[in-house]
Every structure is written in structure tokens, then in C-alpha cells.
Length: 192
Image 1: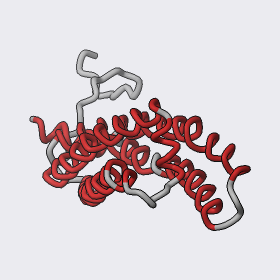
Image 2: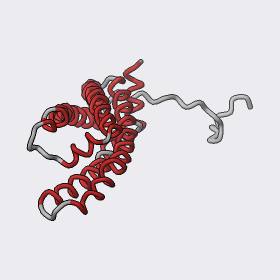
Image 3: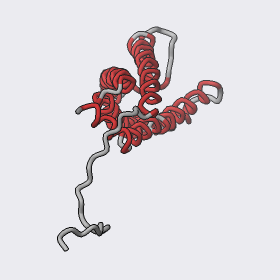
Image 4: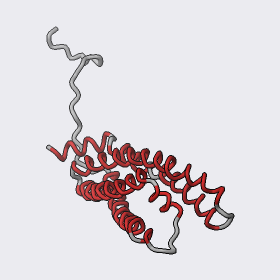
């Protein structure tokens, strides 16, 4: 009875990792999206820097949001740090896009790193906007005359906060897809 042809379905056999040689379509899709968002991100950071450091100092260019930001050193410092870290994160996003399109494991690693940073910084950014921008802006509304400036202040403060929440969608989806089994197996196959 030593040659038992019976295969016990309950026997423990070590699972062999499946090496995938076909590149998942999601890597190409997210590679392209990462590149597009990265390019837009660099442009957005450049415009934000110009607005923050150049336009806000011009006479006759009143912007209640920039005025609030400049009056609060904590929020102003946070915005400067956000611009600097955002530029680094955007460069990582572009590198991740190139890596994903090339099918290289660093593309997945950079995507995961970017997604984690974007989620954490996004949550902190929303909290900072509510504390240092939205609440003070709502307090100032009583002193403002009805008109386009008041409507713009309300729209900007609320829109910026809700926009920050919407900005969390892509990093969460990116993180989910980078953790999927076909992507992990393909990247493992690329390392061997």
C-alpha cells in the first residue's frame, strides 16, 4: 500500500507562486494616467508657486484666501511645505508612470509610495483647510458685502475642501490596483 494512487484533497502541498509573463493591462493604463497626472501636477505646482509668491504681492490683487494664508504663519508654512513635497511626489508619480509602462518593479513601488503619500497628505490637507481656511473664511463672511467677492470666497473655501476629498480617489484606486494579485505576480516574474 505504499504506492497509493489516491490523491488526498486535504493534504498540505506547498503552493507554488504563479509567474505571470503577460503584462496586466492595468499597468499600462495606470502608467499613462500617472504620466498625465504628473505633467499636470508639475504645471499646477508651478502656477501655485507663481500665485503664492508673485501675484499675491501685487497691489490691487486682493484675494481673501491668500490674505488669510499670509496672516497665519502655520498655514503659510504648511502651504510652502505642501508645494515642495508635492513637487517631489509629482516627480515620483512621473517616474512611477515610466516604470509601469516599462513593466519594471520600481514602477509599482513608486506608485505605492506615491499613493500612500497622497492619501496621508490629502487627509492632512483637508484638515488644515478646514481649520485654517474654511472656518476663518466663514467667520469673515459677516463682514463682507453681498456680491461676487462673497460668493467667490464661499465657493473657493468650500470647493477647495471638497476638491481635496475628491483628490483622494485616484491614489486609493491606484493603491488598490497595485496590490492586486496579477500585478504582484507579474512584478515578481520581472525580478527573477
